[in-house]
Image 1 (cartoon, rainbow, N blue to C red):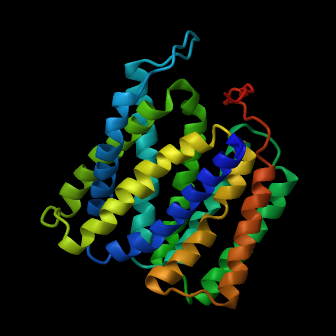
Image 2 (cartoon, helix red, strand yellow; image 1 turned 135 degrees about the vertical axis):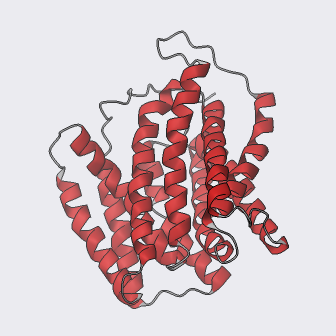
Length: 305
């Protein structure tokens, strides 16, 4: 099997694991406060990923962007704040809206990234985005129509799309400064610390999960956070950003499948049509983002070894 094929399979597995989290988080949200859920999820992920540092051998870099401990801490803190904003809004959203519906709302982050960059770089809005945006809005209208009136969870899910788009844009600007493993751990540690402070304020008397919550928490922390982070890092070494974005567009589809299998959430005809429109809009939006962005160094080709 070629390295490219392995990379594609790793990213498909990553997307499937991400899709499964919507149903799991929604179920956990019935017994845990959002802050407590995130605090335990990221503490488990940090503990699970930390031993990898024992095998870590930093690359020797002589360029002006060579990493140092202070910039790693600062950039990891910035990314961590964006990350907890995304996970926090998503977790709160799932307390009042459906898992598959939240997944399609959250998928708007992929569309918002090129929009965000277009305004930040003061470039004309590409024609493909002019087509993707109304398709996305129409798709969300169908999803909302099927689920009845808009609920507060839908607004939180849209907030997740906005904040996660901010995370993606900021990550693109900062990722090239640091090696993947220590940078990822810096982000996870930031989210863990901030989430525990949040939990101590929001739910000081309910910090310890009930026995039935431990299995899904371990799954979220290890498989859906630590493992997916590593799979994504390895997979994207051999798969282009354009290809990866198309694979990630499958996340709401896998979320719908897992929501049906795990918690028996069903999607009707209107919801299915809305979901298809959101996925099409997501794919279209990526055609607007294939050129390197101004703040991102153009990658050089590397031969497989």
